[in-house]
Image (tube, rainbow, N blue to C red; front, side):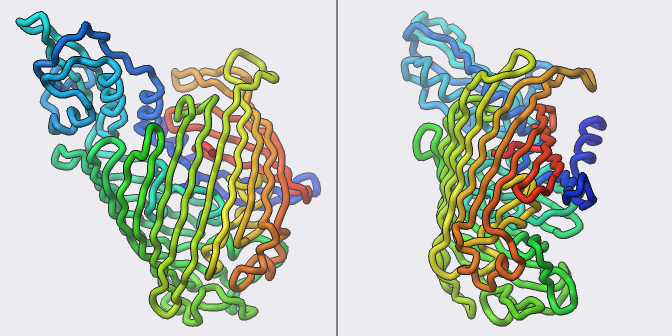
Length: 513
């Protein structure tokens, strides 16, 4: 653990600007709570889901009984904490049914996808009757205590908060700067696959808490409720060629306090959906803990939608994920499509009424152009887009530029718009292998190009934050990078150059797409 802890400390990151070859250089190492999944428990889960699920073929026997047996880390029998029906309800098979290997495999895959389970296997044991068998599910449980570096949950989710993944990166509320986060909690409360977790993030320009209760009915079905409090400088009010602050010279801080409720379920194979309702009280201040409200900047441009510096956002949210990748950890072929729509309900003095649409498509193609050793050579194509119809507070606009948008630009530096299109082409190839911490790591390289545009919509956002800061509204970046899969997640190091000649060195943990 100490060696991984050291890696995580190195990954907390920083943001600075120094001259580099007559260009503006940004060294922006950061764990983004909106993109990084760094805990070893999650990575082990994703890797285990990628492994083939092997079950006995059977010979048409009838299942006389289904038994759940628990083992410890060494494989010795132990008393489990999980109630057996949490395991058995993942199977479509019941006692009295004829054993079906395909149904058994599907059920066992569901058991292995339970976050409370480390590993599960299935065997058939004979009975006194040659025509019947006992179906035995052997289970190794995960620890009930959960701790991780990084905050992000898997999409889709219909909840808001620091630990929630965004369908498209330009929906992120996070500006640049030194920051990091942890998530901790208790899993499998009462043996019923319930979880209570707390996400904490902090940095020079943000502070956030996200308390989440989650009840799983099956591995892909359940409900959740959360409460969050997030204070920070957001990218809509940062970046650009012109500094615009508050009257006192400080950056505007956006505070978001609220909560929500969601239900999530499988719509079809590899197709997940979530439906929820969310409440947010959004305010603008001159720092995280100030009592005074700041509705406008130093030039009188609106920061909040209402004139008093405080808005109420009540939204119905629907999000989906269609995941056809060959594996969830470091995929090499297949695709994933994310979609989200948010409908605000006008309440309070702000009375905000809008609909937001966003989509994100990523295609992974095996393309053996070149590489320096054996290994996967993959072309990754990503397309993102979105628009807002109706009332648009500036803090809800799409922000372009940054380590997960157009590399070479700072966070939110490229644009802030009502609509946007963003695209990336990235070629990944193997370079060499190295040993460290008694493990072997495959080091890969990347060549990439990013492009994004606000489609000329910057002046349609209330307060025109992009226009008053002279953000260009569209631009591209390109560069090279290194990446490797470690026990704490994918580690990425990118060097990007934008179309204005500025450069950025970006260190991140977690997948970009």
